[in-house]
Length: 333
Ligand code: NAD
Ligand code: TYD
Image 1 (cartoon, rainbow, N blue to C red):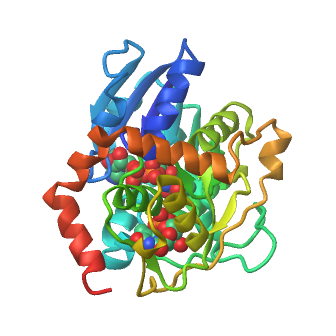
Image 2 (cartoon, rainbow, N blue to C red):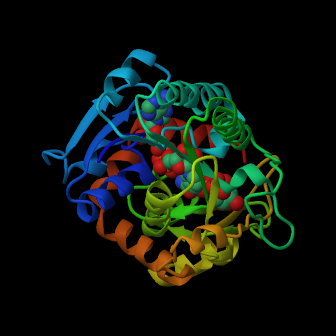
């Protein structure tokens, strides 16, 4: 198997590449990544010389770059995206471009037979806020943020290619992931690294929003299973059911690190903030998926990794790129 992984220098993509190199020893991987602010080759420094792995710098919106990278590949797994809801609220443009138009370029590569399958890595955010129960794959799409709307657009486009051209696509919709190599703008690495340095944790609104904090390795195993056993034209939700309120998550990590709750700072809420996400993953469980980390285990493993790997996040947090974003996002809150 030869796989084109797009966005492999990001959080989940790099964890996925690590998983493949250890569990599918005869597979070869090409990683096509534009290296935006969220892409970081340090995530893959331990595998960069592995002969089964090759990095190509490029944009999924660039047809020529995609055509070249996909040559000889059997399948594409698309992680490449703009992914941060808060950034999508400030500047939606890049989200529409990469998340929708970039997916179109990959779909056309699959349609032209350059790969047998496209696995589109999507998100539970396409369902919108779920007041009660859990969304299964038949739920209607009800995106709240420009990020979620872009991902929903890409999902619809993928399904349209299956319906219209029989292009083999499989979609996964994962919940909030936590774990190693997550860019420290997202809530978990932001809160953990702030707490380690005695910096306040900016909690949006009342902090009563619920997220299913699933360990990234469990998510990656779900994506791999969907790639190997999923049916074309089908969607598979991936969530461990680790529901937690943000305020509970903040208190848990402060207690674990041994820092005071006075570090929690309630700040102005995010506009259009979804109160709760919850998915029903029975369809993927029927194929054999099960998560190995409950909420406490996922949080502890994540906290331990950031505490042990300052070499990874300290340079990121000291870049002007990061400081400028932090100022724009939090100064007026
Ligand atoms: P991330 O922001 O950490 O990484 C995204 C990667 O894509 C980066 O390496 C970036 O350089 C690359 N990229 C961005 N635009 C590109 C382009 N035009 N061409 C090529 N590469 C480009 O994101 P993540 O958290 O690892 O998410 C990966 C995928 O999983 C996304 O599609 C996201 O929507 C989805 N997802 C994420 C979560 C989560 O909790 N993080 C949950 C469910 C689904
Ligand atoms: P985030 O990691 O941005 O993921 P998403 O919005 O895609 O679920 O945020 C997770 C939750 O944490 C979400 O409810 C918003 C909240 N949050 C804060 O309270 N403070 C913050 O500084 C950030 C970034 C997020």
